[in-house]
Length: 495
View 1 (cartoon, rainbow, N blue to C red):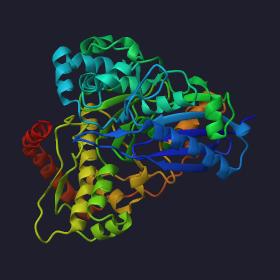
View 2: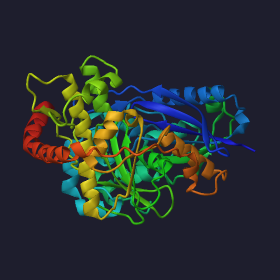
View 3: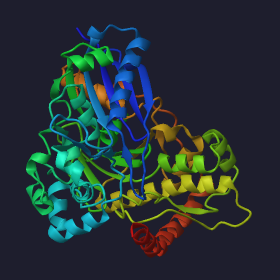
View 4: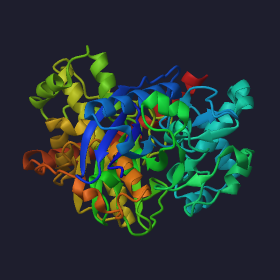
């Protein structure tokens, strides 16, 4: 009987593959392949789906080789990834162009057009999210208007992890939370016909909607040869990366919260009821009957990588050590270098550093970047509080959680202890667990606790909490003041 499952996470900066021993509740092997981010124009964010697939093939081969297990010991594969990335595919399922990622901000005019055609409150009530740069219909309108040749060859729009599973042999589909966050699907899983009508899109453009844990097909002979697995292996629907990362980290009970420090910045809270607010997003929890109100900032780790490159490519640990010696909030940074998603939903915002003088160094600017992202998370917690979503236990995961300084700044800014999830590979683990649930190797959706290792809480430093509260208020004011300047600059760039 199979004992192992595989989870593959199609991330913004890399593709991560994990092999999980289900009985022992442990990861036995993992592999990561880098993903190239393409930004050929202001606000554009794209990636090559074929690179995702190559990374998936290589990652699966790598974990099999590292573990030494036989392919017949693997019971299933599930995928997860950024959402709602848009992959336009032809009738054969092949991409007609690079994927447009969820933090892409090109379709500003199309957002305005749709808001004139359909009432935002109607959209919000049906889908849980307003029309924003994350909505898929504006992206479809942009493709139709700006790349007619590609659009003519487009038969379907699917998500990143949906397409990878399809390339492995699954039937055409989109996962439930891709459908919901795209604005094309309703909270009950049905199709939101008014959005298709407002955009003039065929309802056939989006294939069937499947939920986490459902089988979408079997591994094809070609994919078996590319991965080293056996043809006919069940392919299980995973889910959105931020949702599965929270699920695997243990955000399963009301009051649980996760700060996810990936390429973008996610914050998710568990709820027993669907909580709808135009400032945030709402996802279905993998556990039936539960919900995950959440927010996603356009930049987080991607902004840090940008600054790292811009300042000479220095090691992030070295930058942390430099910034540790600088005073809090000497410089304020607005992190809107790809516009902003939640809670502002404004693709025309732009980044800024304010408060610089000749005494400031690279360390001050780097620290301000970390602080800016933390301020963005605080903005979200204020919205949660306004929505009546209590936050009692906060955890932190993903690559940025390895930075002691960043975690401390987050705890100081949020004013609450943060519990690191040690060795947490993120959504890939959640996908592997769901693969096990999907084929019956695990019978309990709440069994992720067996896979968790929690670190000591990072406690707020009382010396900095008040200073950061003051700086946060200044940061909010700064954002308000610079918004019209950003808008004028964005309009000029487009013209």
